Image (cartoon, rainbow, N blue to C red; front, side):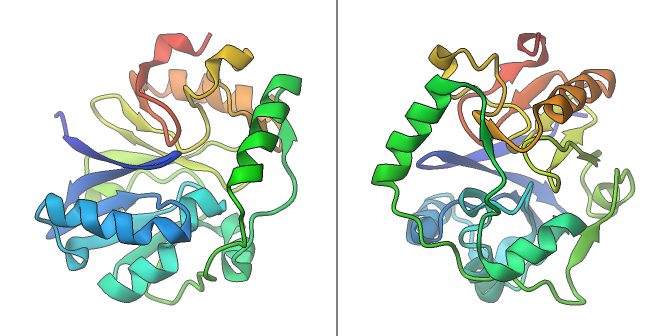
Length: 227
């Protein structure tokens, strides 16, 4: 069964909305200062913050968890995150563990960081009401009215998770991206903790039946691009 996804573009990060029981599940946020823009787009879509019942964070980085605390407070949504994300979410800081794919991505990212002055993000302290993911999970999303599963896809970060729907739609976070292809990325993340694990996760995505990848950075692309 095909499930429509709504793209919310917020600068460098795509957030994705999926229908769930009694509302929506949002996949990722962006930097904390994009929150007003997010609310504006929601208003244009005739969606109130309170209709977002769940927020799934594909990993703890500030361009994915930036306004998670603000949205949680405003909407009362339940946050879904991997257990390995909890420490950095509570600190409100991206872990300094990333390595560039190559010199070209390092140069491009350094230029971006020069213009994007980061100060971290409001700390996200998960409560007993929130949901912690400890591994691959094929039961949670169906319970929320979404025909899909949550998969561990480490490599970009140790806490990376992705959402795979039964129709083959994959919301990959930063496990794969179509950004800066001219830098020879091969649809890999431009920075990662462990590129061997990145490739293992890419293999897993193919084996699990992913067909179309909806990345956090860049435009959607078919799984065949992951050569």
